[in-house]
Image (cartoon, rainbow, N blue to C red; front, side):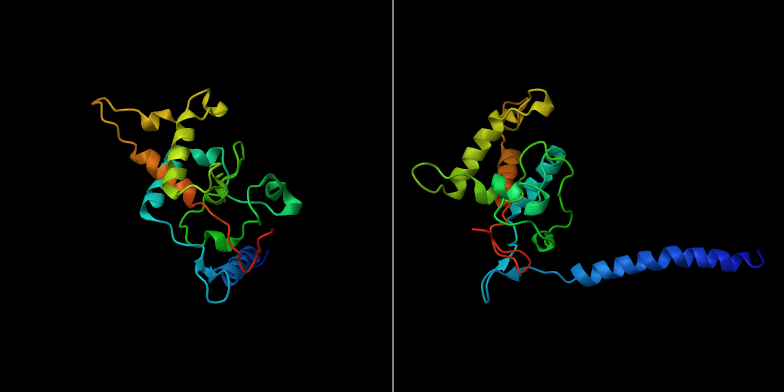
Length: 194
C-alpha cells in the first residue's frame, strides 16, 4: 500500500458517487411534482385540505393511528386493495406532494385510509352532506372496538374533562382529516378504474 490517501479517496468515491446519483435521479424524477389538473383546464389535484383537517392530521399522528392504518392503495399486482374497495386506482407519488410528512404507514392492521373520505358510505336516503358524514364518523369513532388497544375505544375524545366541559374539538378535527383523505381523481400517472 504505497498511497493510503489514494485508497481512501477511491473507497469514498466508490460509495459517494452511486449514492449521489441515486439522490440526483430521484430529484429529477420526483422533485418537480406539483398538483396537476384531472383533465385539461380542470381543478388541480390533490386539492389543499382545510385548516381543521390539518389539525386532524396532528390528532391522527398523536393517537398513533399510523401504527395500524396505511395510506397507500397498492397496485393490482401487489395486493388486493382495489378489489377490497380501498380505492379505484393505485396511489402515486403525486398524491402526496402537498404533505410535508407522508403518513404511508408500514403495517396494515386496520383498513387502508388513503381514500377514506371518498368511500364513506352514503345513507340509504341519499348522499350525506360533509357535516352528516363527520357526525356519523365521530359516532363510529366513539364506539369503535380496536383489538390492538385491548378493547379501548376512542370514546375518550368525546368525554367531558375534569371540569365537566365537553370539548370534542380533537374528535371533530380527526373526522375532518379522515374525510379529507381522497384519491378519487385521475392522475397523469394513474387513471381511475371504473
